[in-house]
Length: 251
Image (spheres, rainbow, N blue to C red):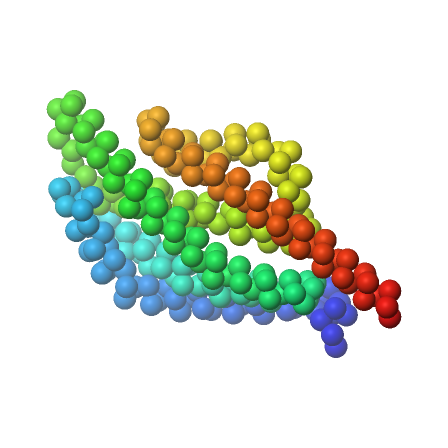
């Protein structure tokens, strides 16, 4: 039976199989993450941003909590490309042949953008924020006692959201290909999108103007890039629909 002729129940069954596969691979990747977490945590503790900070555990379970969190995050990152491929494989029967090849290329692009977001926030934004906080503490004569749990929680809250937010161009491109958004719609809701991005930037940065701008400006730039990408993808969709219509008329 062709995938286009599958019933609703068969589609649900197919989705269930793909979800089971992703969950199984996630469990395996998380187990593998337990072997990688220690070296990553040690590296981050000895990075330039943390060299002058003394890590403390205020609770007996803090080191274990950090260890488990990193294993979970590693599992998510390693499983993400497979999950994206399974999503593509599930929706690809509804796409044109050319669109299938194009959308498949979104997977490595998505991974690259995620790692770029992590790198930007860790190597550019995070050192600035740590230095700013340290200087504030010195001016106030405060002796900082850094908890390992609080340090890594702050690090993850600053870096992981950036990795996800850098997916915006890929998400917009994919939704445009599916016909769910258009560049006209993105332009129409631009001011609302800007407000949402400003709120997101406020949540993931400390209450300080410069660091807030360092987050907000790249996000607004990403949104504008997404509109340009959406226009390009929208023209491709219209062209594919015209070609499909011509083929039907010839038949």
